[in-house]
Amino acid sequence: MTKGKSVVLGMSGGVDSSVAALLLKEEGYDVTGVFMKNWDEEDEDGICTATEDYLDVTRVASQLGIKYYTVNFEKQYKDRVFSYFLNEYKKGRTPNPDVMCNTEIKFKAFLNFAMTFESDYIAMGHYARTKKENGKTYLLRGVDSNKDQSYFLSRVNQEALAKTLFPVGDLTKDQVRDIAIKNNLATAHKKDSTGICFIGERDFNSFLDKFLYTKPGDIYSVTGEYLGKHSGLIHYTIGQRRGIGLGGMGNGEPFFVADKDLKNNRLIVAQGVKNKALYKTETILEDPFFITQAPGFPLRCSGKIRYRAKDEAMTIYKDGNNLKAVFDNPLKGVTPGQVLVLYKDEVCLGSGIIK
Image (cartoon, rainbow, N blue to C red):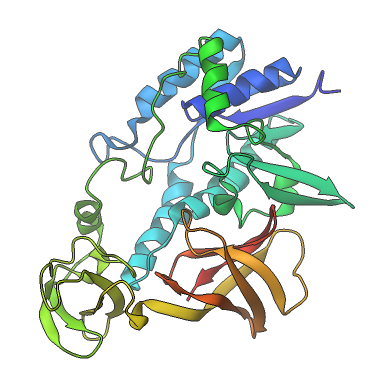
């Protein structure tokens, strides 16, 4: 029975967390909505629409008759997520701050805050699920494969997941939208937010240039041929095709970023989508993390080298404090700093950072 059980729900002002609040209330939970303010939009005019999002939280909470609060995690966010984001770019890598935000803010700082309410659970509007078995809590993919967010939760420990409810994890996005419309929720027709919170819809390179020193340099082919100039290595990521500025050269096929030579400030590119220099058969994973317990090695599983990548079959080996992932098929765009997330069917096992 859920009657009398209390839950503190992270509300973003979007339709997913709004429907999560409705479903929890219908199940009999005593729901408290909390809006997390992680970025000061006054620092960067217009970023993150936090004021409008908070107003949407108040509208939905009022409609549902639930308590709501706001909590400020700006300092924790800048210390734990934004500084990590900048440091990774300084190293020539491409980080995923959304993974770090879940690990450090939503399932650590927010969880600790929620426990001050002496609540039984926290809840989030993520498209993910959990199951409890033999005293352990496992993370499962969301039912909607197109919206599944288990990737971003791959470094959250099972102690936090054991206290977490994912009310929309068993639903598709269309079903969530339909529920919101049928119940006339204030956010029913609100567009999904896109991009990283602190960048929003703004130009990514312009944003980076405000915080990091960037120096133009030379572009070379993987065979050592000088091809032109780049605008700064932080503006490029491994596997990138657009925005290199080498269209029409050579045989006319597109160029892709193959590597970054930080020492000489050179961007290394390869021409043609089938160029072998773009593909890797294996990679080292730093800082490996497993949600329940470390499995036996070698481990046969599937993995995603980025959020929107499809599952790829691979074998994971122990490599000192790291892991080595050996791919069944060569993969394009294996990017240092990105998170490689490991799965066994619908169970998310954990992840490592591509070295």
